Image (cartoon, rainbow, N blue to C red; front, top):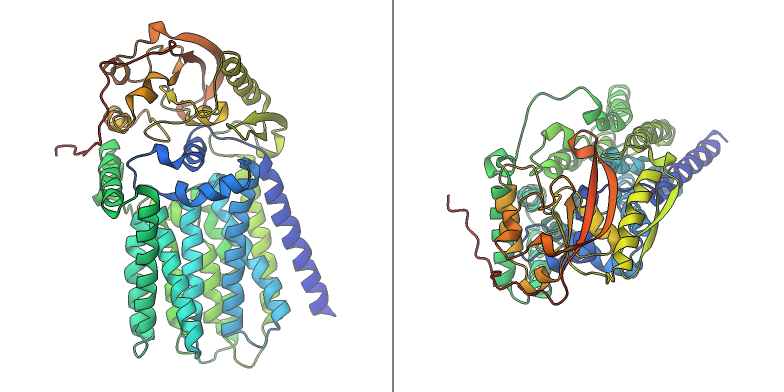
Length: 534
C-alpha cells in the first residue's frame, strides 16, 4: 500500500511540475540571446559563416510548429525531459532489475526533472546549449546499453552514440571535440573484444556530418570553410573566446550562479548512504558508466568562455544519474529508497526552476507576472505573454513597420547591437549574423566581416534599427563604407525600452525604412575568406 501511495504521489508531482514548466513557456521574451536563437532558427541560411549549426537542426521543428515560439520552447524542454527519462529508465533496467518496470518508469520521469535545471538562466527557447544537452543525453543512452549480449542491440546503441556525437558537433564543436575521445576511451576499455561498435559509432557520426554538410552548403569543402571562418570570427570578437581560454577553472562560486548543483544533492547523498548501509560488489561496468556520466557536465560546459563551474551546474542530471550504477543491487529492490530520492530531486528541481522564472535573464518582470499578449514573428506570427512595457514596444515597432509597407523576412540591420530580438519580433531577417553585437572589444571588426557575407541588394533594401541617441548606429563605419546614408531613410516607428544589458537605462529606438529602389554602388560583398591577420 505504501508503495502504491508513493508512486501516485510521485506521478502527480511529476506531471504537475512538468505541466507548469510547459505552461509558462508561453510567457517572457529576452531581446538579446533569445533573439539571436530565434533569428538563427527561423532563418539559419542567413549566416554564411558560423561554427554553430543548431539553427539547421531546429528549423524543421520550427516550421512544423508553424513558427510558434511557445510550442518550440515546449518541444525543446519535452525532448530534454524525455531523453533524460529514457536514460534513467535504461539505468534502472541495467542496474536495478528488482524494481518493476512501471516503478522504474515513474522514478525515471521524476529524476529526469533535474535535466530541466538547464533553465537556471531561463532560456526555454532551443539553442546550442539545449542541443548539446540532448546530444549528451542521447549518447549516454547508447553508452548504457552498448555492452548488451545481443549483437543487434550493440549496433543500435553504437548508432545512437554516433547520432549523439553528430548532434553534439552541430551544437558545440568544443563539446564534441571532448566527447569523442571520452567515448572512444570508454568503449576501448570496456569492450576490448568488441571494437566494432566503436567503428560503427564513428561511421554513423561521420556519415551524418557529411550528409548535413551537403544539405547545408552543397559541398563538404564549403561546409568546412563555414566552420573555419566561423571559428576565426568568434576568436576575433573577443579574447574570451580564444582557444586558450575555453576552460576557466577557478574556485567554485558559492552563490546563485551554481545553485544547480543542489539538484544532484539528494541523489548523491542517497547513494552515499546506500553504499554505506548496503555494501555489495558492483558489476564490472558500473564504475565505468558512473565515471562516464560524471564527466558529461564538464563536456557540456567546455567552450562557453564562462566560469566552468557555473555552466557545469546547469547539467546536474548526469550526476543524479551517477547514483544508479553506484547503488546497483542484484537481489534487493531499492524502490522505497529511490522514491524518497526522486521526491527530494523533484522538489529541489522545482524550487530552482521557480527561482529562475522569478528572476529571468535580462527581463525585468517575473515570468508568471507577464500577462500581456503580443504578436511576434514573420509569415507565421505567434503570440507570447510579456509585460506591458515590452508589449507596447513590440506593438509600436510592428505596427509602424506594417503601416510603412514592411514585408515579412525583409532584412533588418540591428545597429543598436543589443536587440536582435526586435528583428525577430517585427518579422524581419538578420543578414550576415543572428546578432550584430555591440560592446565586445572587436565587435566592429566582427560585424564588418559578417556583413561582408551579405549580398549588396539585401543591404540596400534592409531596414535599420538604431538607438535615438546614436542615430547613425553603434558602428557608423559599417554603414557609411557601404554607401548607406541614414539621413535619407524615413523613420516609421519609435518606441522606448529598458536596456537590461547595460544596467537598466531607458533607450528610445527608431526603425528606419530605406529609400525606394535604393542601390549601393560603394557596397561590395564577397565570399569572405576571412583572416584576422594575426
